[in-house]
Image (cartoon, rainbow, N blue to C red; front, side):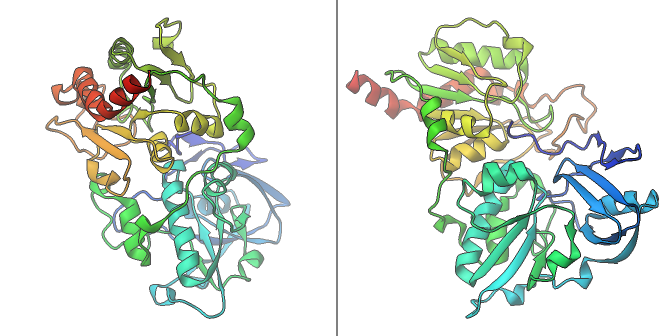
Length: 400
């Protein structure tokens, strides 16, 4: 399924002994000036099975030393399953001075623990870096991120499991454990365009990326929609946490309004929603919980227009070249400044942008009030969609 990054909830990370570990979202989140240092840990148990939501599962073996994020390292050491042997400062870390075109190809290992939306930006960055600086780049990341983003985006490097054994790192000229390391100002993440800042930090022009997202042909064929003359609108109300997701009661109003306006509406998302279960509307198609990421991409590719929250489907729709409307509650339109196919509608409620991404309102409300503000009402959204699709209406009428 798509779009949902590590949520910050407790996860079982270690076996065989029962333990509870609180996941922290690192990745491309701007977290202020504090830098999380990765640790080198030598395992002292026969085997330790790691189940990290950001990287997946991996078995660690006695006597081997692994590079891992600091919280996981502290957990293993606290359980007396391993000992600290150093940190990432002992590694050949990438420096800005190394970002020059080399005659002989240099090998770089990047560690990426962000979500699928961030992965699209990172894939663009790494592809452009490899070309500009003559780098051979491999990446340590979750398998799903690799399969559903990096490979279809055209990234040709290898994938490593994480934590990474130190002997595997020895073949690399450089290691980059944190892609935001060269971004000096990490405040006010809710108004910053991470794609623009990564490009600036690494000296590449992200707008020059000419690739796209490749969908397996058999999935395109299987997900092919009937040829009709109506305008196809894909809509996804989900995002990371309740504060960025669209409320169910407003979603019903917007869905009904779109159908009444003559759009064919395709409801996309990772899980079924009781609020629309059994909803019978001519021109409404419920795909909630029925697609993997390739199938989702195949549907989006056939849309004339996509509506989404601040989430992965908006990033995916943009890279597929589909005009898209992002509905924002806690962030500002500037975060999509480099997304040429995305337009934004931002709530004008006085407490936005708060920058929160999860379930707790910083002002103490039970639910986020941003989407209930008149500036972003379902009726205003409908008006925006009609304006954005005006040329499509004319085209469909002509071809009817």
